[in-house]
Length: 184
Image (cartoon, rainbow, N blue to C red):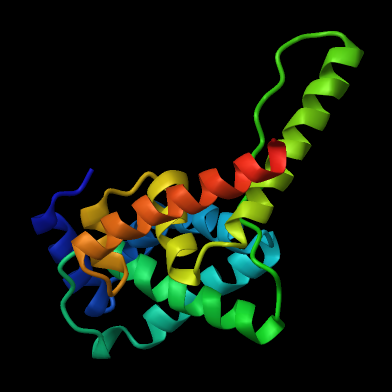
């Protein structure tokens, strides 16, 4: 894993036109960003197209890019912008709640019941997520689905640390309230 110094050197090499540095950045962050894009858009093709566009744009504009404090945060921010712009343009619905839990070995009936329960839970969560603000959905996705800390989210989104904590706290309250009212 690269430390800040080697990431900085990698970024500088990339900006100078070093194709190996570009490949290193691409291979290190591609799958991480792709998984985030698929969870956000629920559209593998859109997520991949935006990611390809991002790396193409980075390569074409490499000489004009500035310094970055955190390469991961920089790439997330750039990708989020591209992804949400593409979603807006295509007017696609963001599906944040497709949770896939592996089934244990069981009978066909148990599997069907478990699958139905999962679908109902997923539908409840999806409906509850619709009650969150756009910002709350973004923060919740980054924190719970991507496992990012509040500090990392603050580096990616233009939101202060305390506002992120508040978003998560309020988001959880909204989700609990809406899920409880649907399942009760």
